[in-house]
Image (cartoon, rainbow, N blue to C red; front, side):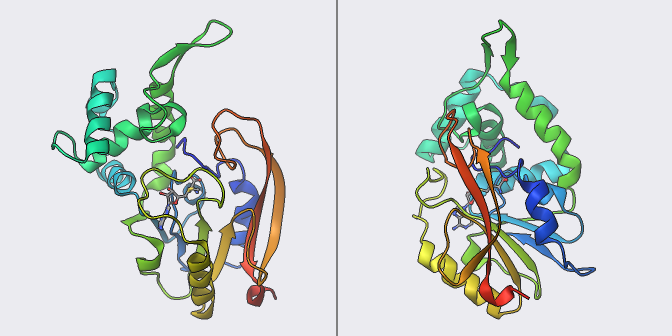
Length: 252
Ligand SMILES: C[S@@+](CC[C@H](N)C(=O)[O-])C[C@H]1O[C@@H](n2cnc3c(N)ncnc32)[C@H](O)[C@@H]1O
């Protein structure tokens, strides 16, 4: 799914490292699942969690009932009504899953109710692009690979993780645009301390970030051009270096 901070483009590079020593039956856990653009390329036992209740309600609905055909056409008034309910958090026209669906399928640049209504527009070459249709087709293609994921709405600290799991954390990058759906400011020292705790409990922990405390080691890095992705700026062509970290005690 089109998502701010998506790892769709680097998943093929980092997953072979993350999954290298995966044992049969071992759980793969993503506490910051977002657009599910990495977990959708993993098989076996999987937990995908996120603090965004609209996102998780939407995934649960899609995994149970499939694409809601009657909701595929999203008009501008429907988008505005859903956005009002989301912003004002009142009236009960839409379920959380429906707010998620409208917000992710019809917000410009994959920015949940922040980028305005995407709809259709003419490109420089005169071609008409239907962005909602593209988003729906995109998630339609992704859906089979989401089947079987245990989606949970939770903040990472409260997530119950099966013992001896592989945990991949794609956190909101420090210094980049934060997620409007997340009320609490992300506390980076607390997060890294939680990672140390998870490693001590016997999990294997991998983190995507630009920087990490000294006891974490970069095991992969690559320069990427980010438009909607890593630098959090929409439409830019800034280059950034994606990195993957593990705790020093995990190095064999
Ligand atoms: C960089 S995005 C993940 C993108 C995803 N890997 C992809 O490829 O689509 C980070 C996610 O972390 C979530 N998030 C932010 N704070 C969180 C927290 N405290 N606990 C769990 N999820 C959180 C946001 O809602 C967002 O979906």
